[in-house]
Length: 144
Image (cartoon, rainbow, N blue to C red):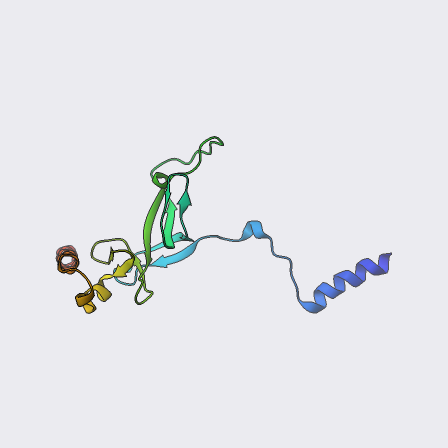
C-alpha cells in the first residue's frame, strides 16, 4: 500500500502536471484603450444581470463608488457596474467608451475606423466623433 502512494506521487512528478488552485486565479485582465491609452484591470465578457444586458462583450468593473454589500435576496443590476470599454467591430482594437475614442452605432466602433470609413456612417455620427476628438486634443494641449 505504501508503494502505491509513492508511485502516484512519482507519476505526477514525471509528467510535470501540477494541480492548479483555482482560488488563486485572477479573473481580471489588463484593459488598455487603443486610442487614449487609459489602463485599468477589468473583467471582460458578456455582462448579463437581472435588469438588462450588453449585446456584445465589454470590459467592466464593479462600481467602485458604491460599497459592495452582498445581499442574498438582491441580484446584481446594471447600476452595480461600470462599463469601461469594448472591442471595435471593424479592427478589433480595445477602446474605452469616451466620445473621442469610440462610438456605439449598432456595435462599438473606434474613432479611427469611424473617420476612415466615414461613408459607412451617418454624417452626424462622423461630425460628433470629429468634434469630440478636437475637444480631447484641446484639453490635452491645455494640460501640457
